[in-house]
Image (cartoon, rainbow, N blue to C red):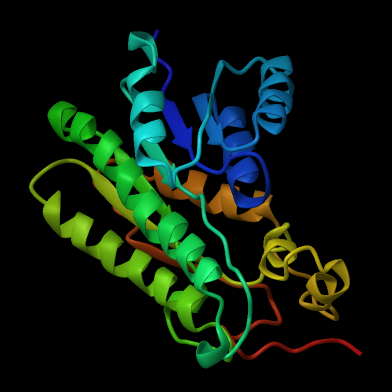
Length: 254
């Protein structure tokens, strides 16, 4: 009987991260879920375990490098051979012109979307390289392809995710590791609520007149990439809602 594969998902308590955790669990993986909210982590853990999945929950903030290091070092030996790392933790803050931007919002986006992703990569990928086996899936965004009005720093962080992903793929080209950048368009999660600091009406308006993607849709794409034959590396996937052409062109039903 072959050993069950292990996936680690950051930012697993909602949205895309939750969708990835559920899809990989359905696919027979043992699942390590991470996030800042211990209560939500335990709720997700309980739900996945009820369906027969082995789950390890680690509560920490990827922005806190020392906490991340301690969490990774605490992983029991039988969970340490991680097959798939999904760097999903990320957020957007604000939609102001760059010259009116909030310094704290900028710091939070850069610390989470770039530095947090790098921290987890640095902590997990060396083990994959030693075993000459593994897959890193970074959740980028269509926003990384071209800036949009008010997107300035957020778009820059997701452009950085693309460059970091491409760079890692070059760095591990002499190994059997695979590296994927998934770039979602409009996904209905709490993303916009966080961006607009809890303004639900403004957040809901983002999805007005269009059926957006869901976290489960992106989970399906991530699982597809991880399930490709060993000689196939799905380097990049742009995933848009049907009425979305790119980061700025969206047809909305009246």
